[in-house]
Image (cartoon, rainbow, N blue to C red; front, top):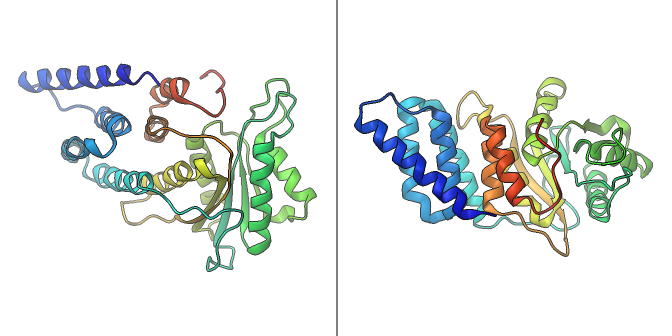
Amino acid sequence: MKKWKWIINIVLVLCLAAGLAACGAPKRESGEIIKEMLLYYGNYGDEAEDKVEELLKELRKNDKDAAEKWECVMDLWAHEAAGVRINYTVLPDGLPATDELVIVALGFQLYPDGTMKEELLERLKVVKRCAEKYPNAFVVCTGGGTAAENPSATEAGVMASWLKENGISSERIIVEDKSITTAQNAMFTLDILEEQYPQVTQIAIVSSDYHIATGELLFGAEATLRADKAGEEKYHIVSNAAWEAPSGTLSSMFQAGALIELSGDRETAFDIYYETYDIHELPPLN
């Protein structure tokens, strides 16, 4: 990660903002305020608390509802950064035993020929155990085309096929096969749930252990951003289950990029992904 590039960018934005304010120029766009806030927290974490509050105050002057939502997102980010409890191999007891619950399986890049890598297979074994423990829950397989030599293969498609072959009813399986980032996993999955599965309100995330906090953050943030107002979210992230990966990390700057993508700035998000993505390469931004 070229951390100093983003720090310099932040300083330039601050200088520009100060100059505009001195000249009595119009208020900044909300999107620029949100991006600056996310970059600050991505770089500095809790040390950016005062600056985040200052930027939220500025955002409130532009759009009170947006400020309330992003305050909730920042609180969620801080909570996930502090450490999330991970349930290894299977979901815990006590979750809804009805079709209010959906198990969301996050994908992983395929081999060039479209077959699964070990990491994705191990995640699916966890998904299978979770689906068997909660037989009334739906299962979302999420992930698009990442097979360089097989454009017809998608992460979600091969995941769904494996689950069906291993005893999970096709009636329970939901396929989201357009996404190529975790942010898109969240956006496109909630689109499908809103349109086709109105009974679903509870979400359990399944992935590798190092990916759980990011998955919970992004699905929780997307639920907040699409709610009518903060505090009235339809979807709640209630639990997780994970495969214990031998390695793998996701940086706070990667999370900043993903939240920027949720905010609608895909170009900046992909600039950050290309510098910080440490799991697999992304295709070019079209």
